[in-house]
Length: 414
Image: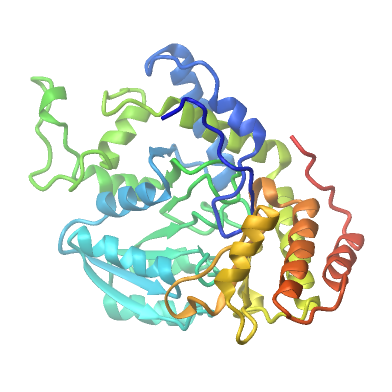
């Protein structure tokens, strides 16, 4: 064993993770401070305020869950859903199936509706299911990278309130690259991760909760025995079924009480704070437009190469595109060649799409024209090596035409 540690340098152009912005990496190497140091609690407050702007909300309960984006999902569901309560999960890809599984593990009575992979739901389909199931919680993915589809959310919150349900959405892959307005769309809970459009590493999950969601969570609040004061009540007879992911305690840790629930992941907080600060500095509208522009350029280049895009293109996420693997081609061999010869990673897919499509991302720090041009040029060369006839240079030219019509300034290298 050696103390020398130098991972290979890759251009990560898959559906996530992506290359972290160097400013985020530098922030994470800053000196550590104690969890109740005034500097640390000040950074926690700043992080909350920054993520309110990213989520476009005034929710006081906007904070971080320590762990990858799945930790945020589990914290939301285990804290919002009591055993035996009904949860409705509209599924249009792998991550809807994940919400179903997590809700079942929470002891929920789970009901589902399904759309074919590559499509999304209409509001009418969701309202019909709400009326039939009468769920306590609707759990819905916004952007599902397994299919590259982006579920429209505007109006869904109003439907949930009409039918007496809380509205939770997983925005791990879509936040900051696609439109999300938590307050305007009446979203009660949303969770994300850093490793997609937020331009950071995985390991921290931003979350925001409406007052309605907080009220529901606090109905099952519980204070663990080692922290309980003589004046405290033990808490609900059926507490939230996780200690680490118990949002009733995490909210008190991030609030003025500063409950000693866990030790905050200091370096991850530094990184998460920088991710949000960079987005706020750029402007959320600008960040979404940037992802849309580079996603369009990538899609145009792939089409010009003679490849067929997957799914309903009107509802495709800005930041990831699915493309059919040409008939008879070994898709894994192409991915391996891209990685080994060009140090570029693109994604495979899951379930019914495994071996049928590649998924190529343009997100976060990699939502830049040099990344798009480099990936298209390399893929063209690799396809040629596998005897796939590709119009020479057309992919880069098609992407360049997209850029030539845009007035958006590219993100400078950090």
